[in-house]
Image (cartoon, rainbow over the protein chains, first blue to last red):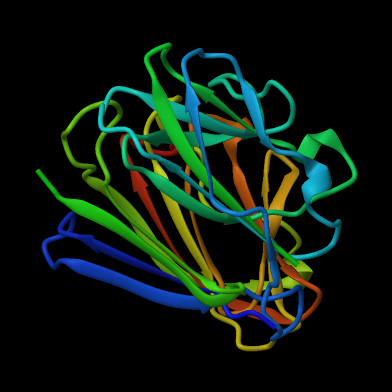
Length: 141
Length: 141
């Protein structure tokens, strides 16, 4: 059994009393205290077109199991972003399974359920043809 | 201007033999495409019951295609309890006991609604925070 720890710290002074959210977790198998044991490894990909690209295929995971997806826009231009979405070619603002936009430096860590269907492929689409780099990693059960 | 940061750490000494894993990321949460910090925050805690079915985490009101972020944590300590997280009725993944997630959110209409559901039974305590670029008040009734 592997042990993968993930922590998040959010600091904000939006409110008059500054807030801090701090949480840690161990990435575990579905309904289990046993840790996840597999990964695709940390990957980095450079993009120079706005075309949607699949970064994780639904077949990379096992249905009804626990998976976690880490994605980060390593760029520094605050005007440039990646759409992140579920489903083929859905990486655009107007489609229904677009999750959100990762701006320069933004990261995400989300649970992911892989079904036997392309509706659960993970796509990204850059906002610009300027060179942008994304790093991502899948943790699997 | 408010300043909000979100910091991630992922570590594992034994996921890949002979090569420890260490990911560290930090980002400032800015309003859409700018270097002005987000100034809207919605946060709280709740109890999610299986009997209530799927509930919207929040109304997806606000200007479409903007920068927003969601933190959600399953605070149950019962390993059997998990939260199903969906977007527009498409399952994103399941959040196991004591697990959290952090995603960008392209809110703006019902198609972007994030829904959460307690599984497979009982009551699950959860906490959340939504950092937003814009906010539209619900229509008066």
